[in-house]
Amino acid sequence: MSAIDKLIDKIKKTDNPTVMGLDPRYEMIPKCVINKYPKTLEGVSKAIVEFNKELIDATYDIIPAVKPQIAFYEMFGIPGMEAFKETCKYAKEKEMCVIADIKRGDIGSTAAGYSNAYLGKTTIGENMQEIYDVDFVTVNPYMGTDCVKPFIEDCKKYDKGIFILVKTSNPSSGELQDLKLENGKEVYLEVASLVKKWGEDLIGNYGYSSVAAVVGATYPEQLSQIRKVIPNTFFLIPGYGAQGGKAEDIAIAFDKNKLGGIVNASRSLMCAYKSDLWKDKYNEEEYAKATRSEAIRMRDEINHFIK
Image (cartoon, rainbow, N blue to C red; front, side, top):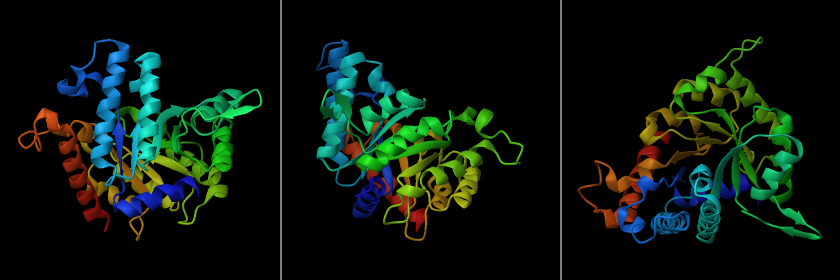
């Protein structure tokens, strides 16, 4: 089964087009977890694993996917990367799709190395070894086809998928992505057209390709433009919640069957126990319950608008 069909099946099963970002900054982890472990790289990494597993346990039946951001694991060195691997493995054991937010972008053997680590397999003599074995990764395409091709090859070989940065949710994204080319198109629209081209050989049963796009919720006008240019490309939509993206602005990304995108939320889910909405109902020790309640609220709000 293709990666995109697997993801869409999970979205349909849970009736929930959302993904939980797992970006475990130290200050986000509840004290009731962090204080169990020594203040070392190994200790913090163990706290991250416990925190992530509790959030996964609280939501795996209602959220189809998780998206761990690699930076918040790399910063804790080898123990942090072990926490990343354990988090991905645990989420897959709970039958969640895993989108590794790694934003890699390089050429030739370097790009192939990144792809081998996350999507494919690493060759060790006559043996082939899976390293992180996630379902999707995010890819930065700004070195052109050369930096995307190795990932696409592994998508075909191993039934994996990629989300390519098209229009990101950060405030300064327009400095480059909104520039106009000689043909009159903005850079993000040109990249969108390339994503469509790159994904033509990986169309799944639902009509979407496993070569998909990252399009931020914080720019609804551009989101609408991109959807018109690539109507059959699946979107990963960051920027909802803490970054200011609204459910009503996201609806344009979805088709008549409520398919076409998956909306990411990180801080608003991970730190729900601190939010004004839930802090009076749940104490710190009940952080996972607060995350579940916020996940249900987010699901229902998005479904209301995309219908």
